[in-house]
Image 1: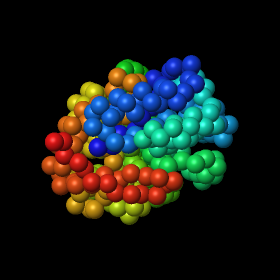
Image 2 (image 1 turned 180 degrees about the vertical axis):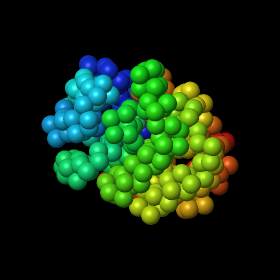
Image 3 (image 1 turned 90 degrees about the vertical axis):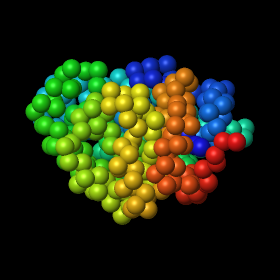
Image 4 (image 1 turned 120 degrees about the horizontal axis):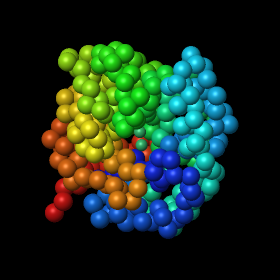
Length: 292
Ligand SMILES: [Zn+2]
Ligand SMILES: [Zn+2]
């Protein structure tokens, strides 16, 4: 197995200097769960470099409490140094830890060329693409009653439509290699009555842009209580010939490679026999090894 979605720091933590020893701890925890390669994929917005090019991104939306919330959240979180992050990850690779260097990149409507330009200057192995907010609505802040109240205004079908459209747009930019948690919009348990159309569009977007889909155990830790993607969407990916990674989306050492063996059963039941790994943003398939 692989764990291709790992954060080094919990949200909100400001003391964020990585070390090779810290990454070695991640690799060791992953190996104990039968994982042969990990990708460190910190949020792009955790780095000051992101703030320099996208710092006023949310100001494009109408002045509202939601916009203010996102602008403040962005500024509070952008404290790390991308150069140091990459430097330490390179040192971990040089020390022969089974690590690849990645980043989780959000969809910034109309700005992905700017993002791609900036990231093109770094030796990333893999870039994850995520939809964490729809315009200025950070729908996955499930603990925030104000954020969750937006569901009443937009409705479940409306939210899924907007999410799916954003994902299609992100895929079409071809600026990322993997679609992270492809049905994240369900995080708080809001599921459409008829998911078929959305699932088809998500799977088609991945296939048409030759992007890999992530299968993540993180959903099992969230209110929805279901892996990303849902079983039916995973079947669609398989039928559309979309390759997959597996991931825990851990934000601390304790969750590294969370439920890795359950993920193995989940993806093999859907017919998958191999996983996509990346080196210098080139894909290489490896077989899923069953435990002895
Ligand atoms: Zn994410
Ligand atoms: Zn993540």
